[in-house]
Length: 359
Ligand SMILES: [Zn+2]
Image (tube, rainbow, N blue to C red):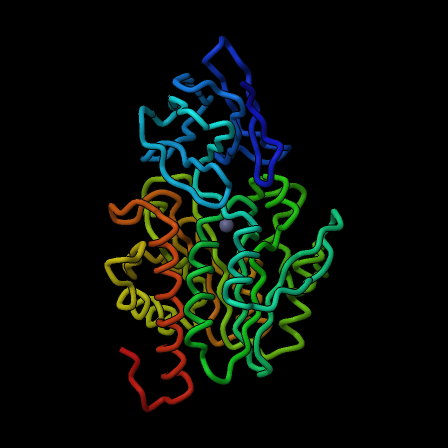
């Protein structure tokens, strides 16, 4: 058997210590210490049990995420600690993918676009010459702008984004075009970088209006925002590994001038989340200038509100493992994304008709 990171999203440094034991580290690639990893085991024998040990706390509450096709993921459960896990391979498990959390493969987004007949185009070429995908729907000048993966490893937000697009395909908000860039740091997503705090520059800090963007994708997003009237802008992220607020779905509030609107939207989202959702509670939002949540630092949301004039712009952080006791799944995160779209539609009704009380 062998361990490989040679696939989209792959990231591991592995040392085999005996036939069935492996010491593992995240492949930081010059970035700060982080927790992202993803590897593939090829050629394990049926009934073979292997033990994988990390050099830090790298495993979530339900063991590793496991997949056989990189698109459908489940929690392996089984024997695990914060630093390692064991896995017994079954017959036919010739290639098994393990990861810190549920990856979101660009091929899954392509399949979604085919299923919903959504028109994917090329935003720009990435620094490594890849086509960065972009979705543009509608002819209205006023636009909702949706982005994910400013930080390459943060894939739980892509499931929420998928839910938003599924809801939008059935119930679009009239008068609004939709533009979606699902993988802003596309090279990082494909190469399996963690991407947060990327040296020499983080993609989500590349939004200082006084400075031209360093990254082609961010440059193109800023040009789109200049060419259109952005009414709403949502950037989907995942937080830190786990614990505290990282076990919730929350908004770090960054704008005092629209704080009542941010709170109103968050309450609408809380109400829109049914029992099938990966739940969001507005009490989990982080007020401005609280702990690490500093107002004014350049980021997508601040650029879209302060420079591009969006009425509502924010980051939505979606936990990797659990929210209020419910384990993350593709289905419940997609349901939350549908709720985000419904909550925004309710917010928009009141925004465009002040006689309507949205709550
Ligand atoms: Zn992030």
